[in-house]
Length: 278
Image (cartoon, rainbow, N blue to C red; front, side, top):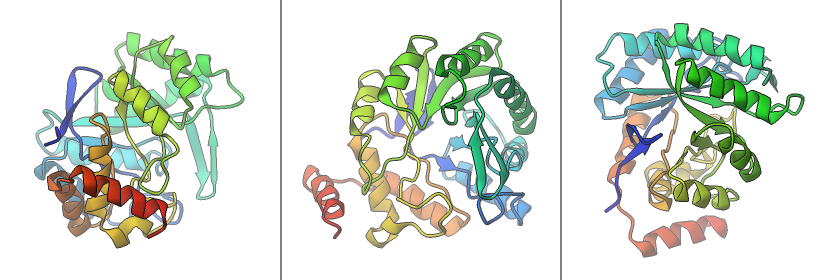
């Protein structure tokens, strides 16, 4: 048996089958307001009904309107136990115009905006979306450390980082999560996962079904999304998967992954099959 709960930051228990909100934006490029706003609200609320209590969003999704949707959906239901993560440090001005901005002043502005849009007094998990090569990494992380001291965010996380950057950040502020790309087909972050496991840091694999950032279909769907997600849940006890969808049916299929038990042989066979392209 595997545990389906992980304590984020040591004090926030989350179900390890979460929900990634990015697809609840207009297309192409997850740019603009989700066209069926009320359906998006119902989908998020249905996720809570199914036991999902961890939701991942970001300023760049929309931008901003994804956070607005999440905030509206969660404000209409009992919010106790629901953990919301968001990210700052990436700007999007068009579907194909996405760039990092890790300046301290920008991170502060986006954090304040996120608080309002999510209708929160404090953000449970605020992640640096991507290191900005034009800003010293320590300055960006240091700003999140300041926001934590000020009580605007509870825990600090990182996304799209290297192991060296994670270690540098941990010298500045406790790091509760890492959100990098990882799935059955793309397993180049194994060392990062092992490090995070050893240090009780949540690992949030984005692209868990190997979909490309703006693709509509997941390449791993042919093997069954539930199996692919179950493989991640079995990979390490600190992995919290955050698949996204715009379909209640697909949401329910994803949630069923929590009940899929893999033997050691099945776990290895799935990995071998993907490695061989089968």
